[in-house]
Length: 129
Image (cartoon, rainbow, N blue to C red; front, side, top):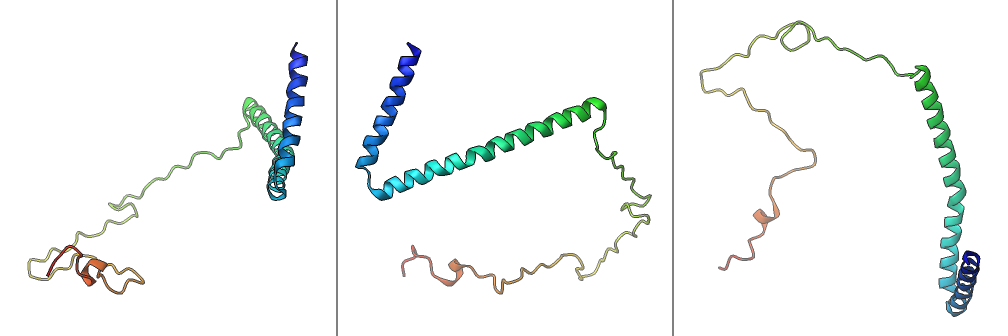
């Protein structure tokens, strides 16, 4: 029974493919042939990729079972004795009581000449004069 269903399914698929291909334009048929050819071309590559990955997994499992991992030992970093970790402590910054402000940093974005936005240059649309 299963064989009869399989043979009838294959025959139906082939008949459907022939009927549809006769009713298609040449361009549509070329697209479908290209898609099928691309999928069939990727099958051997996928099989080789799966085979190589399985071989690599087997070798890794064999190394782990033997204790040969190939990993480097852990790296331990010991900071220096200074407050900032580089050996010598920096003196505390001088606090000024006067009006000079020695604090803030100033940044400039390269390529940005002005800080005006479009809203500053054009009047808002909702304002009525």
